[in-house]
Image (cartoon, rainbow, N blue to C red; front, side, top):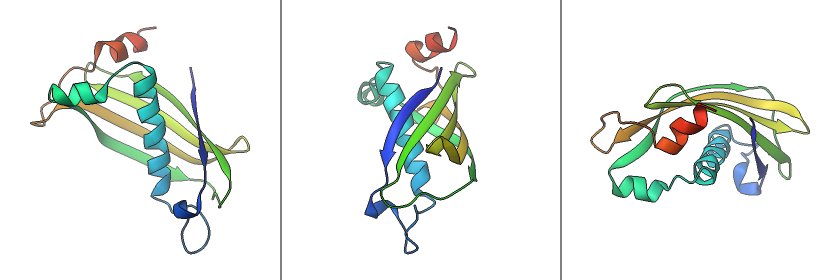
Length: 129
């Protein structure tokens, strides 16, 4: 199942050449992942109050094209818990249905002390469907 997250490119997203600054693609995909967490009903503020946070442990990224000011993009994400602690995401930023950026992201659930801990039950259950 794919999750879609729309992004409009604003002036602040671009570099001096008028294209999206490379690091901003990471912001776009982060927003999509945060939306997925919210839509699953996982309250990250409550998790943090309990001493549990998500930490990105790996990102592999490929830049395939460039977006410009005013472009309307779609961040397409598929995701799955790959263990009791890890959550993997394959994310593609598309413009007009064509991939311009792809990333594979792995996040882990950790205590604030940096020790691995189990993903919330809603996420583990979602991956078993």
